[in-house]
Image: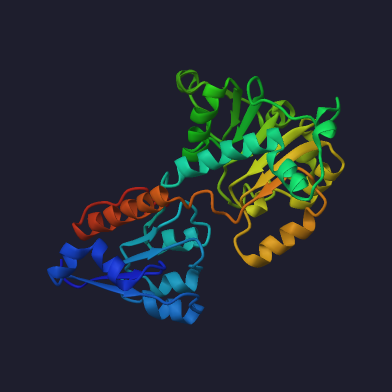
Amino acid sequence: MCGFRLVSFLDFPMETQRGWFKGLIESSSMDIVIVPESPTEQEICESVHGATCILTHFGIPFNRRVLESAKGTKLVQYGTVGYGSIDLIAATELGIPVANNPGWNAISVAEHTVMAMLVLLKKSFYIHEALSRGISVKQELRAPDNNQVWELYGKTVGILGLGDIGTQVAKRVKPFGAKIIYNKRNPLTSEEEEKLGVEYRTLTRLLEESDILTVHVPLTDETRGMVGKDQIAQMKKNSILINTARKDIVDEEALANALREERLSGAGLDVPRDPEDMVLLHKRFEGVKNILYTPHMSGGTREAMIRAIKQPIANIVRVYNDEKPLYVVNQV
């Protein structure tokens, strides 16, 4: 194939990205254009015009105007699982396939989730912070009230969204001796449930039965605000909520209130994406005892980052070889 133009919005050096396609570039049949960080809409439009493939991520907005500039592109390939920043209807109407990058961070996020479960059950971070200020909480945590520490064994873990990440969470929680229930749009077959060791619940029952609720759904119009004030009110007393998905899925104000009122026991949030989000989160949860938050880094392990690029590269090579791309999320 001649004149294959790849436009990349990924934040890797040119030398690194050229190395991914070394053989094709050496044959002088592929050209890579790397777009600088934080481009304007006009710069995005100019960059994607005439592109054969586009390699991008969740942070770049692909609206109808951008997609019209990219008309004729054979693939918009996301390096991320999420693809909510693209107008999928417009892409479909324009005949542009859009592929995401499923599963690359599933193990990393699942491990982070289990870590958060244990930290919050044992109140490890709260205890560490108190001791670092010279405050003993030993007697407080032995009191027969809401402030006890707990085992994961025998608890009911509810998984909201049983995709790649939710499945990996289930596999890692099972050996702890916890009961695992789940909710997803398309439930598993009874054979699949038995193999994984999970039981289906409606959303209401999932909220009511879970000692730990962990959120692993993508951010879409359907899931935005999915765990709102009413849903948090339905959660089991002294339960824990963990969100490693997206910020707008959970009503954080309602969550903060439930924690302050000690209706819930703790929360783990891996959702703030920039310093401003972290400042807002800190203010919102100020004074809450048992909380753990990290800057949306649960999937960013070294191993995951290596997997993150292999799948998109392979998909672009498929397009280069006139093969049908995998993981396409729209009907074209």
